[in-house]
Image (cartoon, rainbow, N blue to C red):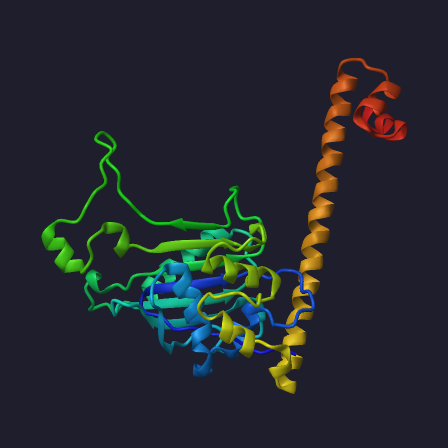
Length: 309
């Protein structure tokens, strides 16, 4: 049925998070599964390299794959992730983490991910100047926070409370950190809200997001990596064992998505009911008759009687 995708990069640490969405039968396999399962194939590194290059506006090349949760045979595929050591056009080393998981407190999960990468990759004898740059790329298929855009970028700056100036590195610190700005030595974050994309691709990264959302690559797409993705992520290129694994993965996500939707609907119904009860109690406290209270609140007369009793 499907095939896979991967990437190359460099210079800081980057990790990508993929959150599942309802599966729709497409000609190409889901990008999150492809990245997690087929990433070790160096012949396909160009796919993820292309995606990251377009997002970061850099020339990303994968150096090699590090040990990761997806490399370890854990029983829970919800927490699979892939760590990559990459190199950008400046020769800087970057760790890229690609993960598919479901975490409700997702924004704090992003923070935990960057913090853990720092702790796990520094030796007790290393100076803090040796800490690698981290770039956290998060691909989400749900409504994370409030905002009208579909690509968000976050970085760390220190702004004066009184003078409102931005703290900068001095000459000696620039040499020490090999950087010209403070924000460049701290983690950076990208959040791609795939479902919020309006389907109109006006840039190379838009073409990638169209693919991430629809599992379709348009014939006219020119973004780096998409041509190879179109060739290598074809369902028909999967082996029998890969096909079975992929179908199991899709079945798991469809089941969990149905639970999520059901729980949301139940929560919404319960919220409405709670509001109706609150309204009814206020009516009764103000001496309004049972019949009118029922009409105002939306509860039945019997339900209002029970509240009164």
